[in-house]
Amino acid sequence: MITSLSQLDPNGTYTYADYLLWQFEERVELLRGKIRQMAAPSRKHQGISIRLSKPFINSLWKSPCKVYAAPFDVRLTRFNKAQNKDVTTVVQPDLCVICDPAKLDDRGCIGAPDLIVEILSPGNSRTEMKDKFELYQEAGVLEYWVVSPIERTIQVWKLNEAGIYIGLQPNVEGDLVTTPIIPNLEVDVTEVFLD
Image 1: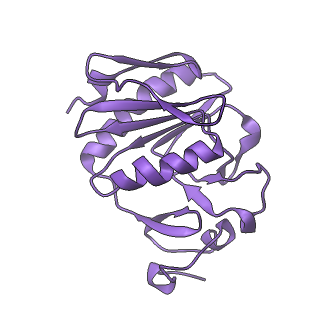
Image 2: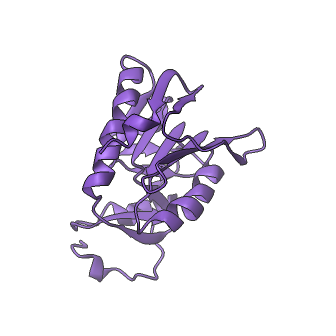
């Protein structure tokens, strides 16, 4: 049993089967088999997450689509029923929406959520903007929202028919963010960034 992150080779490659055996306090994700340690979210990050969650929860009440907040394991794979030893990417998005109940199990989600929201933190901007962008696009996440507390914007990326993300104009304070995935959802950008 692994009880400390220091017991792992930081350059090693791991799978979800390995991940299930880890019993340490630190929060980690696996990106293509590589360990990425997650910092504890700041108070500002958590405030944005809570304010962003409310319109999702209200819009999805009694809906077949479900919203989940971190920590919530999302196992990305090309095959929805891949074995644990075959899964090398496990992420914990700040928010995710899953409309296919077959993708949900007691451990989280296996396969691409319909929508993922990531809130940038000072230490994770590169990972969110490059590494996860590529992973989410490759996995087929229909929409990827990047929330920037510094810029006070929500950037929405939509997957086109060719499986490539197309970026929409950034949403700024005063804008309402909507999505066809959740027809009655309206996220007021100004309210998201209230301090």
